[in-house]
Each structure stands twice: as C-alpha cells, then as structure tokens.
Length: 385
Image 1 (cartoon, rainbow, N blue to C red):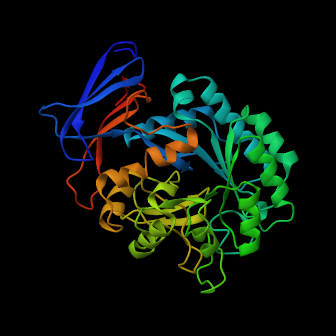
Image 2 (cartoon, rainbow, N blue to C red):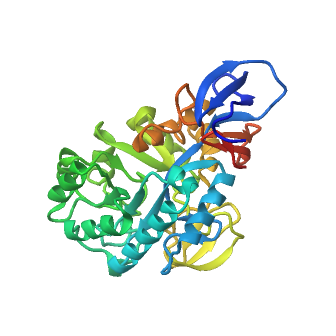
C-alpha cells in the first residue's frame, strides 16, 4: 500500500479504552473516530525520542560511524515504536564529532525513511562540566569550552542538521554561545552541569529552553540548598526531559520533578546506548568504557564507585509503565510525554489528530510493570512493521 491510498487503522484509545478507527490518506490523518471492532491493541501516535545514542548494537558514538549503522538503528527503533528520533552524539574529539555528523547526514540524504524519522541531530557536549558526577560517562579528555567556530564546522559536516545542543552554562562565553545558537534556530539545553543559579538564569535569559535528563548528570551528593537542580526546576521557562527507565530516577523523585515542571513542560527520553536490548553481561562500551548491563536494564560504569550510570539500556516505550506505576500517570498522559510533548520540539509531531503525520503504533500492554510490546508501526501512513 502507498501513502496516497486510503487506509484505516483500528485500535483502542489510550484516553478512554474505547475502540477507534483512524482514517489515513497521503501520509496524514483524515479522521479519528469511534467505531466498534475486534482489535484489542492500544493505538497511539509514534514515539519521539530526542536523546538516543544507539540501540541493539548500533552505536552512534563509536569511532568509525557509518551510514549503514544509522540505517540499522532506525530499523531497530521502528520495532520498538520510535518513529521520530534525534541521533545523539556525546562528548568526543572534534574530528570524531565531524565524522559522525557527516555519516548521519549521508544516511539521511540517501533514505526517504531516515529523512522522515530524523528531524535533527542532538549534540550532548562537549561543553559540559568537567568534574566527576556532572560529567557522567562522558570522556574527560574531550570536555572543552563552547566554540562558535567549532559549531560552524559541525553544521558544515552535517548539512545544518544540528538542532539541539546540551551544554553546561558555567563556561565563560556561554551566554554569547547560547544567543548565537538560538538565533540560528538551534535549541540549547542545560545538562551535565554544576552551574550555579546565576549562571543558569543567565543561560535561560539568553535562550536556553530545556533541561537535559534533569536529575541526572549531577553530583552523587548535593548541597541541599545550593545546587544545579533547584534553579532548573523552579524556572517555568525551562522544559525538561527525564529518563523514566526506573534506574536513573526513583519513583518519588520522578513524581516530584514532574509536579514541579508540570506535565506540559515535561517529556521522556530513552538515553539508550548501543547496549540497549543486548544480553546482560560485562562490556567495553564507547560510552563509559568498562560497563555492566544487568537483566533489568541497569547499565553502570565499573569505576569502583557504584554511583554512575553509563547511559540507559531500555527503549523509550519502557518508560510508559514507569510513569504509570511510579509517577501515577494515566496511560494517555504517560504516552503524551513520549509523543506529542517531545514532538513539539521537532515541529509538532507525535499527535494523533486530524491533519497530523500518520506516524502510528499499535501495542499490547496489560497494565503491568512489563514493557509494552509493539506489534504494528506506520510511518506516514505506510505500514513498516
């Protein structure tokens, strides 16, 4: 079936548990209407993941990224319900970042599917806090001050694809850097930071509008009054992403942070690495070096501290049970944090409504803590899974 043919997709509405039918033509949703049928799978807009470093063995942060790896990652993500994603590159040498950006640009340019799925690239670093804790699993050797000259080289290599940059605003020149990027239409996020309240406020005044995986990328022990978390939680101009894998944030902490930001200013990311979906065991990873992956999806650095995670290993859809059971959200609200809320950052994707892109998923979930199982995926009205 082609996108120009009229299509009907049936499922159950997460909003009220009633059967619905979605009419699709020319890659767009024509109607969403109630109608009795026998299909029992939940029907939702496709998931939007704005922070993903890899999955299923496909590594965006390895030293020799190729377009084939990006293609493989996209196909793997479709199988877990992600129809839009921002390939995420962490702190590395400029030469490695430029190489990776060029590879992503080549992959996207050669594939209509990837052009549909990848709205921009997320560069997480390299201008983050250098100290242990806030730096997370990023390599200390490549942490450096922000540079507009380097950013220009990123954009040349990527064909202008860098659309989100995560940084710590403690660096001299951060305000000018943020103003320049936001003036060019690039989103700037605060993350992996130990900046003080004044530096965070200055960053937001300059245009920073997001906190990257808030509650993580920070010191294991913080001052109860003066830390980088409270100013970000308190500023309503900042939206925030969260890793809802059950490991990065406790249920209570996730609940409190969602209440502080408000659901309309929050969304979830997977922060998955190439080890996501792999067998438990010890690995030598491009992110974190020597790491251990447990059967429950916990991915930690073998640095002797027991404090620091090395990214995540569960797909974005695994956050849905966490949000429902640990943060008390309804299924519809949990899905919003994985669809339309992150979709606003990429031009309004992730909405199951008339006139929107027909990126849909159907999944099975019994309401337990188990990860939902994606059974069907449509990308702009074409069934791909």
